[in-house]
Image 1 (cartoon, one colour):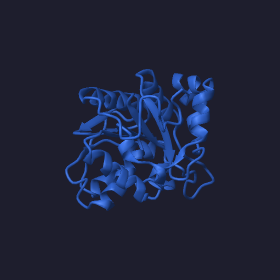
Image 2 (cartoon, rainbow, N blue to C red; image 1 turned 45 degrees about the vertical axis):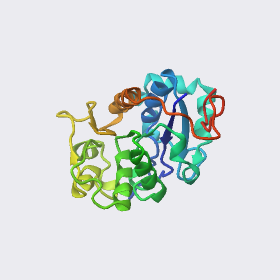
Image 3 (cartoon, rainbow, N blue to C red; image 1 turned 90 degrees about the vertical axis):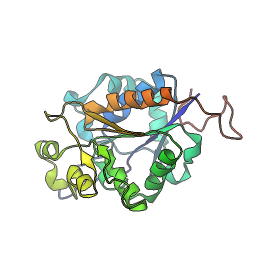
Image 4 (cartoon, rainbow, N blue to C red; image 1 turned 180 degrees about the horizontal axis):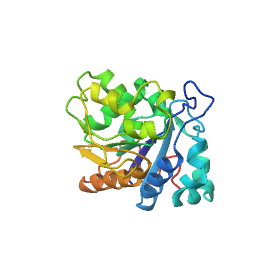
Length: 248
């Protein structure tokens, strides 16, 4: 069974406000069930381990998705979510792909996390796909710090400056993600209409613009995996063993 790693933020504080952030729930649950339903084992990890913070806005009625409701009735998935592995304990060699859900949190922690930056390079260097959605392409900033010039000419998508302004949080973040990625040399492409789904694939790098792009980005990741022959498991692993937090 192929294994997918999902990297979640551990950051919960917005700037200049008492408002909270964290993982945008649908950006986790939509891809999570795409992977589970396609037969992949999923491991969850975060910089601090344990239960990641969830952006309260993503749990409002107008933002609830079908996968959110499924998650609330899925005790095994909720247990896995509350017990994420600490990121520095993850070995990229044990997984076939990595997916980064968004929420505002990544623009603080994953953008600076050396372990995350190294992890992204480990996957790409091994010919394994990397997918990031909404604000999680901020993790590419750490990858850029590890290897200056990494983002030069990369075609990516991410939560746009326009969308940040429209959700009223542009004054509560340390930088605008689209602008930051462009400053580092990336070509950021977005949908013509804000908040519509948009996914870019540049080689093994898949990026989605916003919450509606999470499921499509996961499907794009699965398509890449299906194009690659399943590799033999690492030494010491077998089909019945898994480091996944949820494989039951």
